Amino acid sequence: MSGSDPTSRPVLEVRDARKRFGAVTALDGVSLVVEGGEVLALLGDNGAGKSTLIKAISGVHHLDSGTVTLDGVDLTGANAMTVRANGIETVYQDLALFDNLDPAANFYAGRELAGPAWLPPPLRFLRHGQMAQRTRELLDRLQVSLPDLDAPVALMSGGQRQAVAVARAVAFSTRVVILDEPTAALGLRESGRVIELVRRLKDDGVAVILISHSMDQVQAVADRALVLRRGRAVGEAVPTAENHELLVSWIVGASAGAAG
Image (cartoon, rainbow, N blue to C red; front, side, top):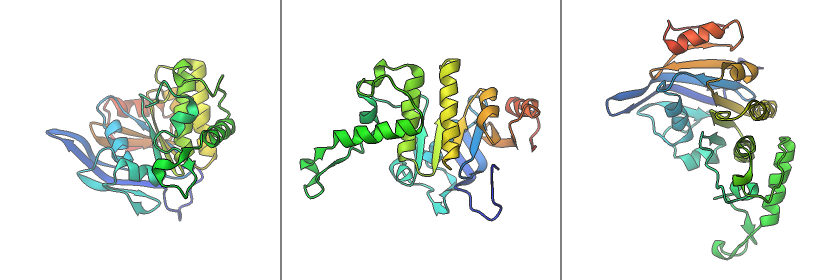
């Protein structure tokens, strides 16, 4: 693990996660740990259990058995709102952005800043200027350049939209960001910008779980790679060029194992 302390407690820990949908076993005893400032890549073909696992961590699915803990706090069975309140944010492939809203409105959708505090909530005024300023400051810190912060995200490129979605996660995540195929359908240049965002998250001490089919991107940014196949963890290795064939062999169904 990157910069790990053997006496420290992992930021996120999943133990013996099991989940079935009818006759289909989606997760069959999967365990993982992630530390602050570490990028863990989740690899595997479609149906391997990656999406089910991150949805269980995010509170979208509830495990049949197993545990999810964040900083030692048990979040097993918590709903998505509780999980987010504890500092875990997830960016799914569809981004879940409101195309007709600008970046600031997307950032604060459902969490709008309003005041004054002495008024009852229905009578408070939205603090548009404060929300726009905080959005601008965060985008500047992440070195995200947008042509017009007042423009709806529908007018932005795929990479800019992805950057807004990732930055929104960063704005409210204090511990873990989960990225589900963040560079899917992006060009090389825009993919590079998203990978730079992941590096900045790592530098800020945020734990990152990255689902990606791009081995080049995984090798560029991940500290470890965990391979899932048919709902089980079948191998873990540092994603280096030397381990490329080993990781691919686990993905396609070779023997389980581990490598450094």
